Each structure stands twice: as structure tokens, then as C-alpha cells.
Image 1 (cartoon, rainbow, N blue to C red):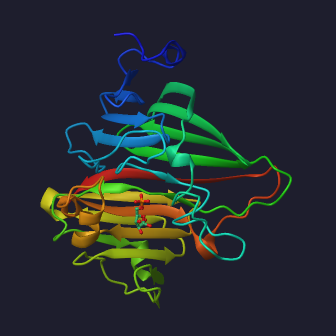
Image 2 (cartoon, protein in one colour):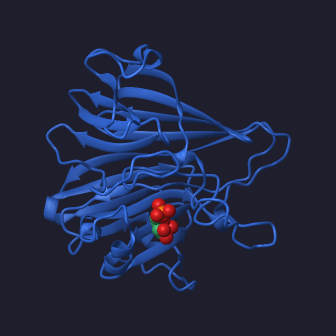
Length: 297
Ligand code: TA6
């Protein structure tokens, strides 16, 4: 089967990486190795699937997701950049003309390279989004490694926000917990605007949950007892973590999300938001990333 386009043919790696058109017309990379399978779209450089060999998929992808320009795919790892949630104008008002979570998750990225590495099948995608040049490196192996390099190509210091907005697939929300370094950190409850100290206890879900934890959390465990599995999330370059589940009412309001799908997912997002936003000097670079691996209980 020939590559989806002649330009992509040179990035295909026999038996490990092929490109094909999705039914929506968007172009996707399909990864098949002995260590894992995976899938990503050039649209938004959006990873939508990662499944270690012999295991259930690690990422959640909504059955109602919409695949088109100008819309982020619901699930996988959307890239929120260079702002998180609504864009604010200099006077603090919301910029009604800009989409939530920035532009890059809706834009077409370019393939820069593909290679077989010891850690797995590696691809690098790139995007120029004024005033940033972005490089997004994905390594699909027994672990999923994600790293974004943010290059400020302007002559001014820039202060972007970022969130690698990972949707984790869970077998039973009622039993699952988020544990690890995040549980001791203070957090902003986005639903009430109130700030709370860390509870130093596993985070469980029994209502809409939308929290921005502030502080480094290099290791977070997404524990899914019903699947007899935990997913270990190890991050770098991140000083914020968002924990989100829409629960019943918000799930019902989201057209690209099944009403019951809140029970099959939770988001734990590797981020730098608000007070943790990055400061990138003129011509300088910074990075943020994470690695996912699974462990049985
Ligand atoms: O990451 C949590 C959050 O900010 C929630 O408030 C919710 O809006 C979620 O992001 C999804 O945002 P989206 O624009 O992808 O629908």
C-alpha cells in the first residue's frame, strides 16, 4: 500500500511506520513494532493511540471525536500551546476570537524525521507558529516518550503556557486514583476559583474534577485497579499538572464526547500554566515532556 502522499513516503519505515488517510481525510502515521502499536495525526501532531504489546490501550480516544481542520481531536494527547483555556487580552478580558488551549492542536504539523531507535520508533514533527518554532519528538516503544522543544525565534522574551493534555483510558473510574508527587501540591480548583493545599492522599473521582496543581510532580501514578494496571507518568520541564474529569453534566454538554465516556477516562496533563508559565528569552529554547510506562499491580 503506497504512502498517503509522496512527501510522506520518505518517512515510512517498512513494517514499522506507514502513513495513511483517515476516513476524515486527515493524514495519520501508523506505528507497528514488536514493542507496541501507536497512531498519530499530522493534524495537531496529535498522538491518539499507544498500546504496549500484550496490553490494553493506554490512551483514551472518544468514539465521538471530530477529525477536521479547526477542531482538536477529543482524546489522546492534545497539545495546548501557547495558552491554556481561554486566551487573555492585555487588559485581562477573554479574547473571544481565539480558541481555547491555543492554536497548535488544530494546525497541520510537518514530518521532520523518522527513525528506528533502541527505545523504539521515533518521529519528529515540526510547526512554525509565530513567534515559535516547535519540534515534537515521539518515541513509540515499550514506553511512550513525548518531548516538545519550544524555540522562541523572536527578539522579545515570550511567556507561553503549555499543557500536554493526556487522556488516560481507565477500566473503572470509580476505582481509579491518581497518586504520586502531585497529591502533596497546592491546587487551583477551576470550578470554584478556590486554592487548596495538597491533601497528601490519592485523588479519586466522584464529581466533576478540574484542578491545576502547582509545583513539579516528576512522577505521577494513574492507578487503575480494575485493569490490574497503573500507568507511570514521569515528566520533565513541567511545574504544573492538570487533573480533569468532566463527570456527568459536562460530558453531556460535550458534542464530541459520549455521555458515558467520562467513566472511561481521566486527564493528567503535563503543563506549565499561570504562575508556572514559561519565560523564553529571545532566540532561546525550552523543553517539556513526559514518558508513560505501564506496571501491573
Ligand atoms: O484540562 C482541563 C480543561 O481545561 C477543562 O476545563 C476542559 O475544558 C478541558 O480542558 C477540555 O478542553 P477542550 O477545549 O479540549 O474541550
